Length: 173
Length: 251
Image (tube, rainbow over the protein chains, first blue to last red):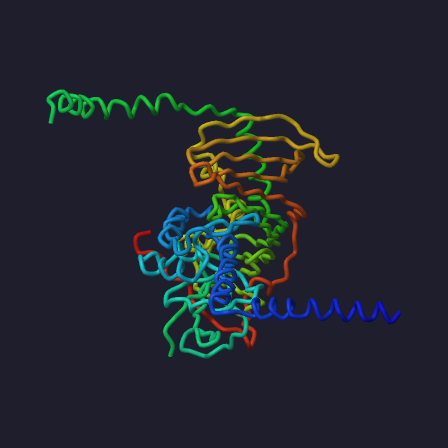
């Protein structure tokens, strides 16, 4: 019994520094955090898929593709999963879409569904960006003729596009 | 510029206009009158009904950025009172919205988000559908709500055929297939005194990825008794009015 205990203790001592190292590694250097941020942003790709505009209403889906191609920020993405191999997985894609002036349906194609993942260090979306659902933690602000949502100091104005709700990032107040 | 290519262009410019009527001749429609007759009587069952209701399960494809078609489902409970009242309750992925039309106003209301848009609308269902389409609001089954949709449904048809009878879930249906320039569509009709559509599939073949729209119709009631107030939107206290997203000016 005593021997077992000693061995256990020895094992514990042997492994605990390793655990500590692992912990400090995953807890994160700056570089590590950035990576987490990218991965979280990558979840946005899947949201893109979820919120493409209605194909059956002759919306220019091709524009959407162009938007995505404009932003090839991260080259060798690690791939994996069923759908996420594209190069359009961060807010930059949405911002670029707005910048080239496809601020209506084409950008809606880059819209997002409700966040299900923890998003770390994702830059705020650009003014004019249109998404399909609000992020969490928003509060309604009354405004003339509409309502504005304050989501962590990013302001969204809701619209109906077809029969769907969309939310556009606006300057506010 | 070589002289030969100039002559070739000149020749093409001369022949080009001749090619267009030739192509039109090649694409003579081939329409089976029996297929059109079944389509017409099916549409008539619905246009003859003053108050009617049905459910439709809609599956529609959207092309994702990886060029994969993603299929979304929703169900819509539709109630119509001709000539000027419609209620559609939609429940689906990203589209939980109720639609009200009472002959004067058309309203979209999302009961979860508590946001609505309400516009004055033409005084008939036909006019309302047309006005909403200009606003980008469409309903896939809207043909069935119109007063006389048959002509517009067969306009531009290239082929119309009867595939035959098919048994699905112990019921017999007539399977019709149609093609037009931008879409191929199929209809499954339940025969009877008042034949009714049970299924419809549309393939938008000129859209990227050729997305498909499938509608399964159930619970047809051609003698519905809708509550008088179900077509008028009553704003809940905590609901906010918003607008339509600005459309592209070029459209």
